[in-house]
View (cartoon, rainbow, N blue to C red):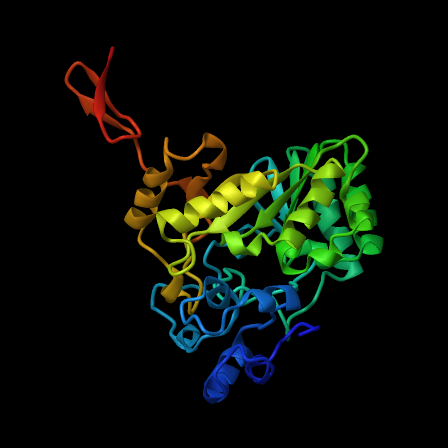
Length: 345
């Protein structure tokens, strides 16, 4: 497998899918984009029906099951999009989506209705200029977050000028880039790409999307090292996924692997209500139990914020477990072993 696989028939010929499933999975691929890079394809264990890598990237007939509560735009991007390519949900920051394609397509993607083949691959030059004009005209914007799609599929030749345009906006002090590329296609994370991302006087933060420790291969860790050693600090975001990382052991291994790679865990997202993704969602209570299981036992460096994007565009809310409750004489505080103590006053 020396090229990205994009069709169920190709996946079957590579030994990743049962050939008998191809006709049904072609229905999935006609609606939702499919792509798995050689790096990730090599990680799949076809003999394991519960393989967490396969579960994230190989199409499943369960994706054809859309629940009544699921939404085409589950986090409400559209209602906060004043111009094409911009999402301005919070006062001091905006999303800028210059591209609508990814190196690999996750089966649980919350933007699955807007990315991939059949959709526009990128903003037109005019639309990109209008998006930058919006940022320039809003001095309250302190941070610009490049998302998409995956902005790092852009070549350094295209990415560099965009970064310089953002750096030239005086009130923009921070640029953040969300990406899957270091785990999906680490060889594309070159010194030239790192140089394009680095700004002379403003920090660029790279946020890696990874959901299982096995994604952090030696090649992926080396790609992340190239970014960190170029002066680009890294955070991570993960999605809590049933059958992938919804056990204490799997979640702990992921967070430890990230920190060992010099990446600070930032967010653990509760699964969004994207169409055809019910198979991946846990309950909030299950997520809280998992977070509670790591508290104290695992280094604080490994603790992400457990958050839920409120459907309808109302933003993220922290939904982690609480350690406090009201008691006579003060507040009850529960330690990491589960013992409650009175904090007086």
